[in-house]
Length: 485
Image 1 (tube, rainbow, N blue to C red):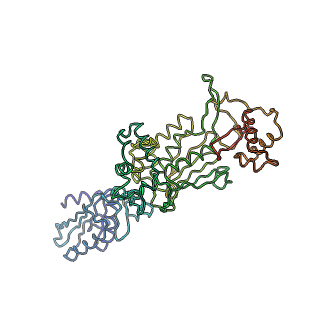
Image 2: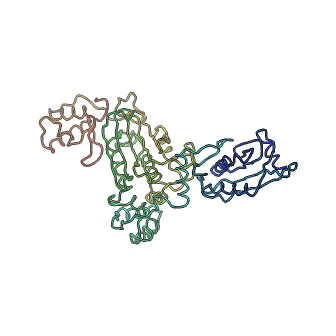
Image 3: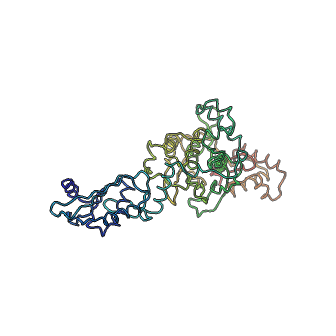
């Protein structure tokens, strides 16, 4: 053993090796062992001076009891820690204390209430954000997460049964469930999808399918904003906060995007029909929203997903960092899927929104490439994860150069003959950029009937001056091209 120690000591301190001169540094040694547990494992050797010479340490029964007392302060108690006492050849009453330990299987570990990690040959205090992240990952491994917790007082009647049935129908249509699931009762469906146990609904069941959030699910929220300009200091064009189940949030985000993201209409020489092409690939945005809902940290009660549209980009952010073993660069290549909310991710998989093998981010990249758009950018900040889609051309700014695929777009003439009402409506839309029918009626100097306003809007649309985005009462009229501004 002495020969082996000499070999280890001759290589010096490193990420996995540390020397301590005496037991006066016992607490520091325990911090190092805690760091090893939270990193790659290692060996701490007590009885080696700063020059790498083995000087040993007198060891009594009290010494061993003191060491055991300090080891008990490591939580959870490690199973791989091994303590050996090696007698020096020249000094029989002196021993080298060798503490070896493997990487722990219940990370994060603490010593005396504090977590440590190794940074090269140093032991460092673990930042609180990192500790919280590792604690969440440990909870995921034990299957004791927010989504698996039971909801007191909630019943199956509190869920949207049609949405549950729709999920099953879609899953069977795309061969992700057998057709036998169509005949199952709602209760059996929930039990088999692990959304119900002990005759109680889980948090995941409520987050996915609740009719209304009367059970204080304040974190089931999305904040939607359209800013004028490229920063959050710009003027709000539109701002909403929508709470509801996951599919209501998806629909609200989709409707918001339809209102504010332009769609280019053009004709291709090989086709007679008009082609409508969104400024961003719809499936890429849906993938990012699905990931935000499946990966976010719902245990933060004041958290929310945010979707912000600027003149030059669309950003989606959710609270909750990447797992510690994944990096931003990993997201740009094939990687394993590690959803924070496995049950919710399974439902999104059954709906066809996501795949189960970690292809979400690479799919976003590929969809943007196919659409000739810049690749999405991934980032972590403010305790959360973001996806940013940049536009090829800013919206709300004049386009200097038309992409080749839009060369055959119908040109808009300024020489159409308009009556006074049509001119006033056109000038209102030109002034305010985007208006609903009710907005237009409220701003006309001598408003006619709503039917007449719609008729005039249709005339302006037929002349190619304006276009409609969205559906229903929230649909907005905007200029067909920025050249009119």
